[in-house]
Image (cartoon, rainbow, N blue to C red; front, side, top):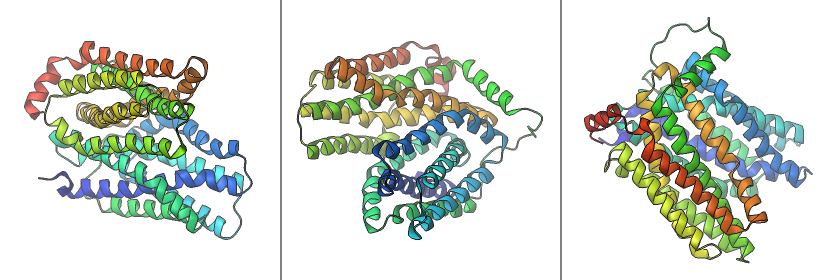
Length: 407
């Protein structure tokens, strides 16, 4: 049975496809809007920085609140709030009342709602599909995200050319679609749970951290996923800077980014098929090993446009890793802890990966492009060692479960 035939999962998936497309369109429009109201390039870049800081700071509290509150109500509240925020911004632009403080306030408030929505949506997936199809569901989500990241910026640029308010009103509409779709979901999005009002938010966060620290599998997930994300993010940034330093024209730089992104999209589309061909640990080891080799090849081609293609193949494998890791996390973590566990894992991976562009830039500036690519290879090597050696990925319980699930 095709996964999207599961009605409630299909509603959630399509609603988030619309939402992510709207977000990808407005991400490009925000800096353009700041520049259009006499902001500087620094102020334009600061919008994204503010959002990134908010997401990092609130990631763990958001996971705790996801486990404390009703997921459906939380997701609906976030969608309603984001719809109102972007309608407000669109109206302010149309009426000539937009200002830099308003743009910063709306982008910051939207980031708060984004970080609250994320863990709730991720944790809800295991409630909407059979256990043996959870990893496949995360693979579908990977495809959705890559497709939105490819189509969104172009759509945002087109809408902005139609009118400055258009991308933001489109984003508001996407959140309204998400709100209506989530309302139509029939299944509960969480197990029934007891009242947690007697515990503080800090103690809830501490409980989540303690659970992750005490789980060999979750520790292994972090040790594998964090270097992978850093290596791939740093490599993508290094390729663009390296080709620019070697005097490649702008259209080829754009082509390079497009080729790499298409590799990720094709990999996301194929991730479910790839997962069915190997057990969880076998898939993980093969994929990370291949990524390690491909990054070495890309490093050897440093300065040549051909260095793009090994990275494209590497990004083809990345969605299968992400889907496998988060699928396994969702099926092995108690429901009442999933929000916190997801937040800890996501924060661990994204905080380190967020430093990758800065690290790559520093290495290229001080030591050269080859050194930057060598750091990417070293990070991927660390991930490979973790995948091969960590006990959490070799436990008999996981091997037996793989056999039962037919993975």
